[in-house]
Length: 309
Length: 63
Image (cartoon, rainbow over all chains, first blue to last red; front, top):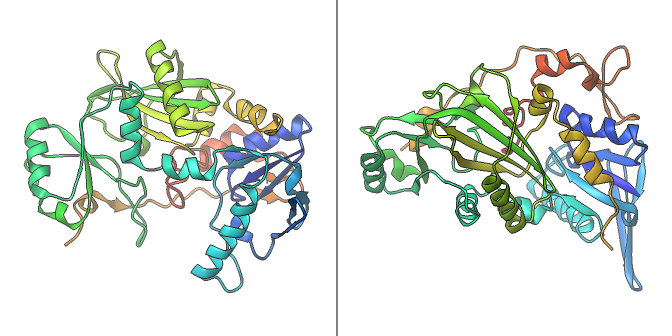
């Protein structure tokens, strides 16, 4: 049985897991869906009582029936490296590839349907509340007057991207940014905007969940710092997971039907962990490098387990 | 009118670090010039920032 890894070639984080699987002698095929068609070919036929199919890369071929798991890491968009790319070709390629793969018995980290749902930050906040996390007051609105009222109520607030995606042309970054309650909110009418109560934190918490195994890491922070991804600061250290958080993570992962999730929290001076988001495909390499927590090994173990029956 | 949040966007800083590794399709991972897996070098991992929490931001939105 084979593990299928969907990611781009330059993904060193995936390498950490691939190397572990190689060491354990677990067969795997790694490919980037961006190479379909071109360097990747596929075929499936639906005759009789089932279907039979396979994927072929430059180096390997794998039967769809022999897949034990699929790891969706950092896959490119199907069709984008074709000789004549187009939106239609991307759709055709995406439908063919993922349509076949989701019909197999393979286990997914994470299933595309669950991943798609889990990317919606407004949904994340709702599920986080239901799961018992402490969630900062948050507003998503396109009404300037509502934004002004929220700012007047909370005074200390931040703005962040709803999608988590950075503006792309030209390349820009949009860190979570602290804003003045007296800001001019009229431009809120130009697009839905996410405002959140600013949590003055004493530490950032990154909690990586691999099918029930929790790896928490803590990094001390300046209370005035907002988005630690864009600052040079302290190293991550392993942290204990409070029982309340452990139960909430379990509830969240169950509701979201995720095998993997990377949670971000802000720890305030009282020690409360405030839920910020859960990235269903969040990076873990930087945590493992600092803490030596065996996250890649846990993922490899999950991927190498037997498929669904 | 420009969306409110974009007022706080700033130009992305392109990493100046070269990537001292290449993808080995046979082994299905990136290797250093001496043939060792790139992940065997902590210095490479730290210098290239490819495992960092912003590593996926350019093409993905799962950091």
